[in-house]
Amino acid sequence: MTGGADFKDLNRRMEGAVSAFKTDLASLRTGRASSNLLDAVNVQAYGSAMPINQVATVSVPEPRMIAVSVWDRALVSHVDRAIREANLGFNPIVDGSTLRIPLPELNEQRRKELVKLAHGYAENAKVAARHVRRDGMEHLKKAEKDGEIGQDDHRVQSERVQKITDETIAIIDSLLAAKEQEIMQV
Image (cartoon, rainbow, N blue to C red; front, side, top):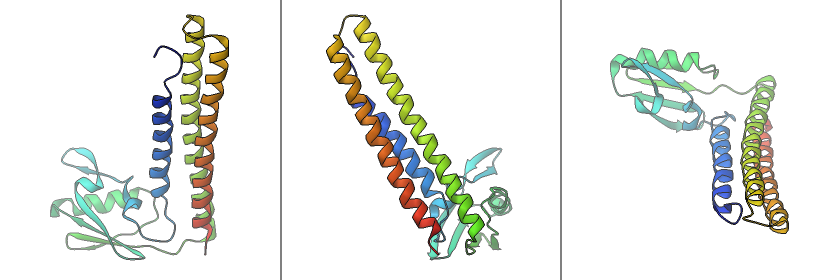
């Protein structure tokens, strides 16, 4: 990376932070059923912890219902236990090799907890973006110290790194505001 910062790499890493944040937000329950709500569930199967989508098919047959079709009948009880222990507030109903999960209405307290959780995810994404900025700035300092770039180039590129960081944080904030509004709607 001669000549200063690698802006393609910085942008890629910033987009990675935003992408991870979007994935975290998708796992938050907003009153509508979504197959992403069970992404965080790991099932003890075949001697190891596996994501639920590796032992079952997750679908949304109705707006307020999630259906989990377990492929191996022997794992139905394991999947049921994993969903109950994931602290998502779900009570699966076992129907053969299928688990039906009705989504209860969100009460005000649970909505506020979800908003707090969303804010935590946003803060983690902002920290990741700041780490990328720090790496870029350290690379610029090293490049200037090694004589690869001058003071003026260092200042211009530092401002560009800061601009990329500010834009990324603005995207994170707008995604958070949209999710917060979605959660708090009655």
